[in-house]
Image (cartoon, rainbow, N blue to C red; front, side, top):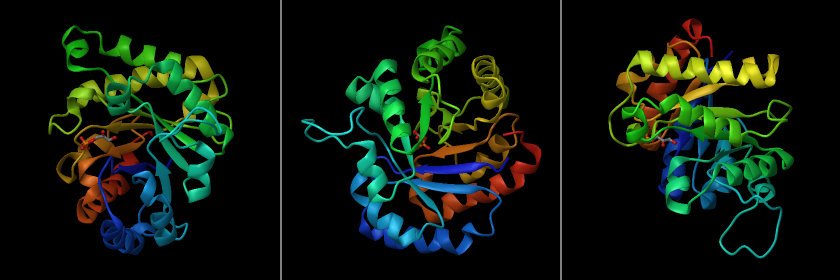
Length: 254
Ligand code: 13P
């Protein structure tokens, strides 16, 4: 399966960044063995989608669980879709921390995204205390079990991103063994719940993925790609990571 490299711009970016990154990404996208997706802030989805001309997909970073209504400041999945998005990141640890999002809310958002035809990128990950206590797998598999709806593997499908909270923006990553073990545990849970469909869900790793460590991470078993934060704001770094996926995809089982 082709690996997928997703850039999460978080609350960063501008029209100037769109003008800088879009041509750089377009110049290489067709030669890469990996698929690319860029998730800018909501205000930049439409201009980025126009600039990428459908050749590279665009995603949102959150959506509301309802289709419309009195929810000041929120954005519905159908609105993201209309702006040009085909993916949406849901349940990111920064949303869980900043906005108190629960697994039940994440599940409702996944259902709304899928109903609008968006492919959800569902984020799970343990914090540092859970890792220290040996509870990382319990936390992650619990989030997964509570967040994913029953029809998760039916079209338009969905992706899972394992992002240990303590690895995000810290420059620290889990050991290769720890990443492989967690991805293996997630795969086993997906298979047990969804059967053959669960075997095909891409499981991305996220948390301090950089050009220097991308090849090592992307070659690990059951790593189907990467969810990249800071490095996705620099065209050269994002593309260097994508090139590592090109090499890694032959060895990876993602
Ligand atoms: P960094 O790559 O900046 O650590 O961010 C990871 C992340 O949170 C992507 O969603």
